[in-house]
Length: 300
Ligand code: GLU
Ligand code: ZN
Image 1 (cartoon, protein in one colour):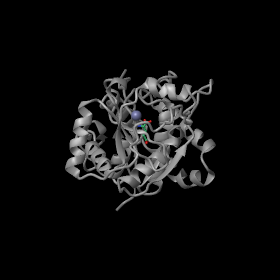
Image 2 (cartoon, rainbow, N blue to C red):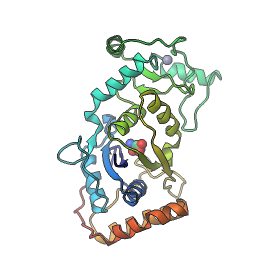
Image 3 (cartoon, helix red, strand yellow):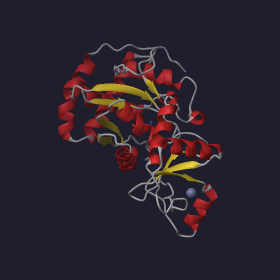
Image 4 (cartoon, protein in one colour):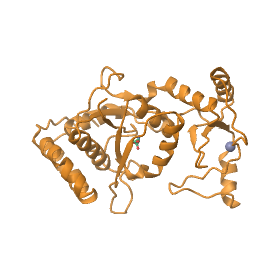
């Protein structure tokens, strides 16, 4: 099987310079190593999404010469995999974990967890999340048959419970939210497995997610993945470029600007990534620079 990588943006808005750095790093790495490079749209959280953002992201990637390989199971129009079409696969994964005694329903309110912090029963992790104090964790995990697990899932789901992964590390994180939305951690692991992803290069804002993904992959019987992180781009205030910090969208309306944006992203990588990595991908970078650039009219 050919090694594969992916870029997996959430369509909460257009790409900005920070996302271009991650996309470029992952594309260069895949191209330098002869891997497939897929596009996966992580549209799991409709309230946070912006209408039209997926199309805009695809246009921005194409304008910068970052073309993705069409994945066989993907949406026919775009060649990308949309997580919003993957509900049944996430249900199957959750039911598998329930059957294995590795997922349990959690009824803890935000208030209860805040109280656990205030009373010193737990603390925050480096990402600012409350480390789950284990209130709903069953003392004895019980193995169940597949039909029993499916029944339990349906019952608890009707009651609006969140589901947590019973992690061997003790860090029991949410894999399905009480509002019925799938958690990023479950979806990313299931889909990386589904798409046969072997290599991931992404922003280091997701560094602390890597051990969670590893234990979840093991629980679901999925093969290991080589994961590398790129230091994210920060603004003058030291904040990560993002929609929240009002990072301007990448422009696609002028060839000159597109080239400048690519050069900015490359110089960030040259500064931040190990020399050996830069040496490995520099041939792919040269080829990208020689590609004709196609400008698109502003879409916003
Ligand atoms: N969808 C995630 C994000 O936009 C990235 C997921 C990943 O690369 O693992 O932050
Ligand atoms: Zn709970």
